[in-house]
Length: 454
Image (cartoon, rainbow, N blue to C red):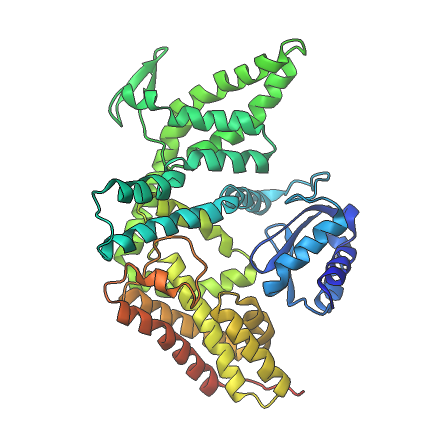
């Protein structure tokens, strides 16, 4: 089936264009927010040639397509007739109850970071390049070239992270983008730092205002944009049309900015301190933390909640400059997913399953695990259990040899050299990858499974 036909069939079976509230995609999944979720024929979508699975997660209908997702998405956009990231329509009904509110909050938090992942990953690779050039003796650490590469080009996106988050938060919350970015500019204004030392308090019309550094901080601007959403409605309502063009943004800034600097900023710093302690615990219990997270990672992919770690990852890179837990555990889980599929390919008597398993093995080694997860391991059940065991063992091994991610990359065999750039022994780090693969394949082979017939 062609990508055009597949896109057409998927759109038809989710209820048609008129049922789509928004449409986007990730690495392997076409994601829909539908006005009426019950109108989608999930079984019919699953039976389409090229569809691996269909999931309901985080208020979205997620169609798992694997590596073809980008091409199918582009064709879907042509059919819908809107060349934007999302198809604008009336908003779906707001989620109800504590569970619904939690999902909505998590979805909003993720949406504030996801669009910036590519530029954050690119900036991180610039920092890696600078370190490699220094290690090779081609660039001195105190040279202007190194400082510009590492400190300006590489760190720029992290230092001014509030601007990126403000833009994404405004898009997600339907708030004026320019006013939201103006709030980020207020947070980052150098005059704030000249008023006193960090941690001291100055007077703002008799009210104490704590001096803080907001570089690389995300939570203060997210909460501020959320407050702006409601303040802007009030400002729009009370501003006469004749002077609304300047009075509305003036009221927004006069109300939100002081609350942001006096209340939201210091309150968010408490959450920031908790995050720092969390990072310290993860770094201290490195091998165990990686092992546990590696075992949990496939379950998170299964439920579509693995993106919930993205805000944590970005904050780790912004604050400590590396991630020693989440991405290494993702690498262990992806390699284990491939190892389990390889074990199936070696043991199965079915030619069709062997071909599927071999293809899924190759795909998982490249970081695309859905074909192995849904098409092989979960389908046969026991290989899924073996894969979880292999993920845990591989994660502990990678934690022990201290594999670390210096930037945001998709965990795969292709990106393994990046994980080794900070490893004390790159030989041991390199060996941990095939070791995880072989251990999982062996567990799968001897654990066995109920074979399928051609």
